[in-house]
Image (cartoon, rainbow, N blue to C red; front, side):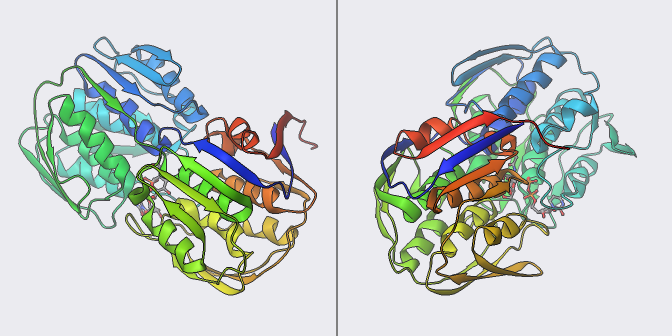
Length: 421
Ligand code: EPZ
């Protein structure tokens, strides 16, 4: 097991460079399966989720070359064989392979995906998309066997703007016969990044970034290159660190309008924030005003930033109210923040954060990726030493987090430890 140890209350100043977006890279890599030639993806973050996807590609027989932050994939000779549950379980995005294999071969056998335990996270809308295009879906426990004589374009009306269902519907429709329209599609920037790659490969997709996406099926997809967009969640996490303990902390290589909802909330609190074309400069908020936040699909406030933001809410004057509308179990960080001295009440899918409160270092545990990020931020802002256990979760989504924070003045290290039974 790995744990992060932080000596808090250090002022952070200098520059943190943001990496490629995890939630984009994990969609771009499975999309390579659809290509009939080699593709190259640049600015890929070196995080464990990417390692897991590379393992699936290699298992399927793709030729993969990974050179620092670039990955080249030739899947012209892959074998469409069942992906074992042990690999599928490693991350949520593994089911994107289910869609690209189905889209390319009209057949796939795979297992229910993994992912953080922040809710039930069903995949019914993805399966609805497959069925609308003519596929037969056989569920046997955790295993899915999906087959189609022919995939024919149709209209897919999503019950909610699901990111995963939107990605999966696009991947399965790219080579289907005729036109597919996805209504109530998710508008996240990662979807536009994926569509950019597919269109560079010769796909015919329009409407990415809006709630209605149209895909004209094509027979052949040729070689292409793409750059992964900057990670808006990593960027938002470090901007929040700046609001907690920054002195003109510069968060560089960002696209501000990809997390405008966070920037607006920081301004509402009274943050000292400078927004440039591709960087943000932010300092510690003094005497911040409490705010109300409700998580929504893009461009609303990102659910992935609600846990990191909660640490900052503990520092504001008065009661802040945060409502989590996307997941039913995304407050597992709260008991650990309260153990550090926060005053947070949970009421169903809402938390009430009373501040300002002092945070005192102690031992806490990451329960999921963004809960872990929240607790690392709490350690930076706390008095004394904070130990965050089970930080493998954090390493899934934050490339070089120790190096990046140390480079701007944090006293932080990572070490192996043995979990006491
Ligand atoms: C993606 O998950 C992200 N993961 C999540 O980031 C992110 O929190 C989420 O989108 C929302 O922005 C990746 O991109 C790999 P959804 P996804 O389908 O696709 C319900 C992180 O921290 N739903 O938009 O799984 C579902 O229960 C991770 O980086 C259905 O009911 O999210 C959930 O409550 C965590 N049926 C809600 O919609 C479905 O078929 C949002 O799910 C699909 C979803």
